[in-house]
Image (cartoon, rainbow, N blue to C red; front, side, top):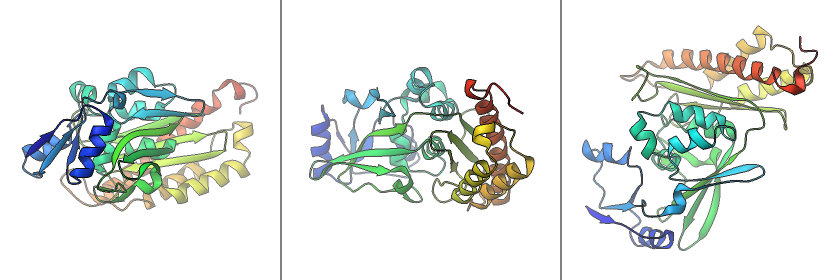
Length: 297
């Protein structure tokens, strides 16, 4: 196994072009586990730790450009207001040591359906910035990024440089079910984001299908119910029947498997429970905003 250590982004792209099978490594929290257990033996490792701009972020008017190697700790400490769902997801990642090393780029590169960042990215709405030496930069919508079990839309000579994530314009939530409280791979996970500016709701489901997915039928149902009932304007409590239907549709969006961490039926049930709870939490937060402080039922 050869170790490539570029000193700049341009050198990294050149190395990836010359060695398309090279596996990028930054935090190493996924790659090193696979290597240590001999599940993977790449010909080349491409170390990205010397490339400083991968650990930086920029906050724009509508979006945050998050470098691929910004550690989860940085998201928790500095971007909680702009990216609340992703900050909550970051809290659930493994241990403090791993949160200090791992970043969203690694989750995206591995594309495991159990990656903790995926539900939050789907719910918030994100674009993945990738680049190759030959074709330059392109943005891949998060809904098009996951192509199969641990597969993504990257071309062999492309590297992930950053993620463009829409800044929160409403409450966001994240829930994760695990077999213990820390250092655990998700049995299933769920992200929810309210977008009052567009009067829409987005979801994200992890570890309950071959890829991270959105519950699009549930979103469409809830968007229609909120609009027809005037909920965005009157701030009323969402009725139990609406919440139950939303939860049932979220469960139906799953296509899980039985494995050592949980059964398929349990995953469907748990996703429904998390969907109902996160909807309740986010809507209560929305009702409590200053814009709805008067006349709320």
